[in-house]
Every structure is written in C-alpha cells, then in structure tokens.
Amino acid sequence: MSVKASFAAGLLLVASAAIAQPYPFKPIRIISPYAPGGSTDIVARLVAPKMSNSLGQPVVVENRAGAGGTIGAAAVAHAVPDGYTLLITSSAILSSIVFSSRNAAYDPLKDFTAITAAVTQPGIMLVNTAFVAGSFEELIKYGKMNPGKLSYGTTGVGSSFHFMGEIVKLAAGVSMVHVPYKGGAQAAQAVAAGEVPVALLSNNSGMAAVRTGRARAVAILGEKRVAELPNVPAIAEALPGVERPADWLGFYGPAGMNASLLARVHAEIVKALNAPDVIKGLSAGGMEVFGNMPEEFAALMKRDLELYRRMVPLVGIQLD
Image 1: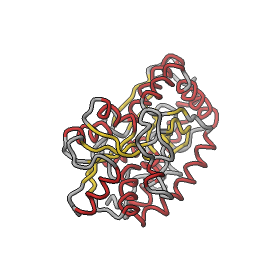
Image 2: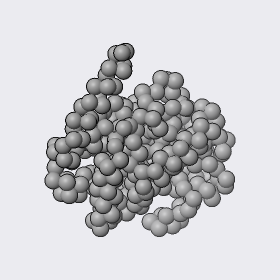
Image 3: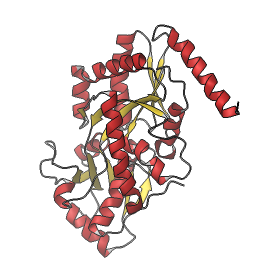
C-alpha cells in the first residue's frame, strides 16, 4: 500500500471511530479563510454561538487567512470528515482555484462535502472620497485617460471580486491594476485611507466606510440596486449583459461525511441562520439567508464551476 493510501486509510479509521460516538462530543471548529471582519467571518460568528447553544459544545471560529483563502480551505479539505472541522467561504475560493492555478491544493468537488449555501450578497464598488472620479462613468473615463494609474483592491487573488474587477476592465475597456488584500476589512480600510482609489468588496465590508463618509459607492455588483443606496446603479445597468461571478457564501466539510452526520450538521447550520437575531445581523451586512439543501448546493457549485471555467481564460487570472 502506498504512503498516500495508508494515510487515507488512517483518516477513515479515525473518522469511523469518532463518528461511532454521539455527535458532538468535543468542540467544533469553523474555519474562515480570510482575516477577521469580512463577510465570511461575520456569518461564522453569528452562526457559531447558535450552534453551540443547540449542540451543547463550543463552536469556535478560526481565521486562517492567506493565499487568497486557499490555506484555510486546504486545511478543511485535508481534515477528518467527522463534523468537527467545517469551512465557511465564498464561491470563488472553491470555483476558481482549479482553473486558475496549476498547483491547486484541493479539488472543489472531490475534496469537500457541500453542506449549504448560507447567504447571498451583492458586492459593491467603492472609491475614496478624495478621488477625482465620483461615479462609475467618471471612474471609467479616468481609467481610459490615465492608463496604468488606476488600481483597485479586493479580498485577494482569485476572489470573486478580483474576477469582477477584471471583467469590468474587459467590458469597459479600461486599464486597472489589481491590489490583493487578506480580507474585506483590510481592503475597505485601504480605500478609505486612499491607499488604493478603488475597491471591490462585499456590502458588509464596504458599507461602514460609506456610512462614515470615508468612501463613496459607485456601483452595486449585482443585477439590481439596493435599498440602502437607491441612487447607486447596479453593474447590470452600467455594463448591460456583463456576466458576473456567483455571490453566495457557503458551509462545507471535508469529503466523506456520512449521510446522517451531514443531515445533522446541515440542520444545525440552517436553524442557526434562520434565528431572528441572526437574520437581522446578516441583513445589516447586506446579506440574505439562502440555506439550501446539500444536494442543491452541490449542483450550484457544479454550475458555477462551469461559469468560472469560461471566465478564467477570459480574465487571465493566474495564482501561480
């Protein structure tokens, strides 16, 4: 038996022994692969205490930022599928990695158990309030007149916001330089401080800077406008027909979770998501509960993989 096969067999034995005991009998970890303060972190920290109260065990959120979120995701992909190590992440961290990196640390379909797409959220494009462009049209005009001088921050290389930025470049015919950060909070701070003139972020990460007057919203990265910013156009208005990355955040476990364990974990997460105070907290961050079934989430992942498959050669993102 090869070393890899022996290791896999060992993991299965450990998993079988753990699953044989009533679940849960020890603390559960939810890994968020970005720095604290971003959307995945917010969702995890709203859900964790509800799960802890229901399950009678601590549910701890662990931030493992770096490499565009792939470090945290890989940690879960290689964990024992016993329900004690979970992942909360965006669509891009799983969908884009296979097609944008030659040395991916995991396969998004084979190395994870899809639990549920937890929430959906439109993104937002911000500019620093001191920047000369105060609208999307002015931003594009500036970029065309000043090639190479316009930069934009996102949550990292290969993120859905990185894809969106590159799509805007292609669709609008403008030059922009990507500046990756470790998370949404860091990118929001960067645009508010003028470190970058533009940032593409989740509503949750970006709206604090807008509310305090440190940044201005110039586009909603979705199909329609949002109630809090009724005068800010949706990207679908500004660039009709543009194809957008998926906008969900989802929960996963390692591949190989058995059906009864998956059903239990799914039920606990969805119950937590639908608690009134959690819904209120998510809504404040511009997020809406999704909470689909595992098989529906797996199908959604496959669909979005095809979207990213088409997009990667177009935008030319390469992680290596």
